[in-house]
Image (cartoon, rainbow, N blue to C red; front, side, top):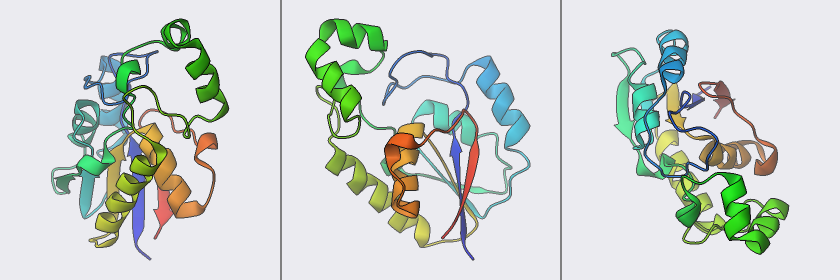
Length: 172
């Protein structure tokens, strides 16, 4: 059976903020995580988000694995909130922040992606991945991986958690 491994990027330099598409590098700890976990993986292909933290993570995979950058694997766009701490969001947009907490994926950040756009991107990424070859790896981000997990399993995306450099395996 074809397998897909979803790998979340290693720990980024900027932590404690809404990263979204903010293009930050991995921290030293993140580089160490990836160097420990990823060289042991085997796959025919690795699809990777174009964001730097994902690219640096994928660079730690064995060189024999083909790498394909897929823009559709980019993290969910958080618009005006990118790079901000949640407390800053609550200070600047108190009503919208309260609504967002009750419906995280249904309420976009100002200038951020709407749920329909996110799902469309995730579906396009899965369509490409399902074309093979297998096994396949996708290196990306917790938010978009929550959507991919939901599409693959039917689970609600709000409950999805994935640690830095954690690997989830799915039978396609």
